Image (cartoon, rainbow, N blue to C red; front, side, top):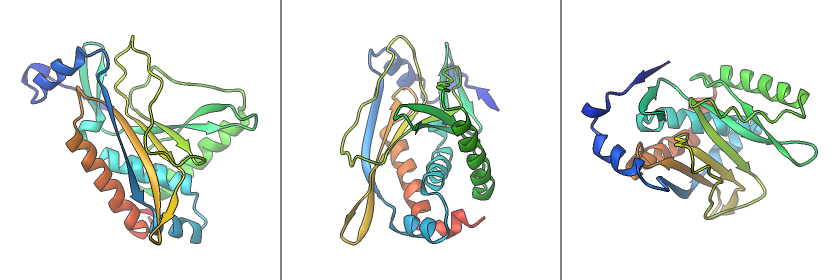
Length: 215
């Protein structure tokens, strides 16, 4: 479900019109989050860290309204909820796209995510980018690399406004496990303040895994 925004009376009208004309209206922020408690909890309870972190990130993002805006043609819409789609590595070391239905309940999300992954593995030749959907968050997982900066392939002939999130290889520092994470967004819809809210929500969930994953 979504609603159409009345741009002329929207509080972001000026920012929207300003950045929409840019050749490159995208910006990204890269930071680190403390996953120590979260990683330990998932490991002790035999929960997939990939599925759990996908849930935690998507839950945090859905708490920030600005990250659910999308540009659709000449319109701006606001989704009720958005859902994760992630690159998944295949046996031949190419990748495809797998899509997950978001739910506030981790148990339900986890159950559905396992089914989605099983279906993906049964269709090894499937690529399925689903470029027609804007109710998504595009995830890339790089468990082999600890990065401090990243950029993404872009088609400059479109006004794609789906956020792109990348999570990388964690490192241990000062007895904490720190995971790099990057998010890229369309500046017509999102500012740095909104990304700080997303990171704060995400970190809160990571620090309290039992509260968010045990239900």
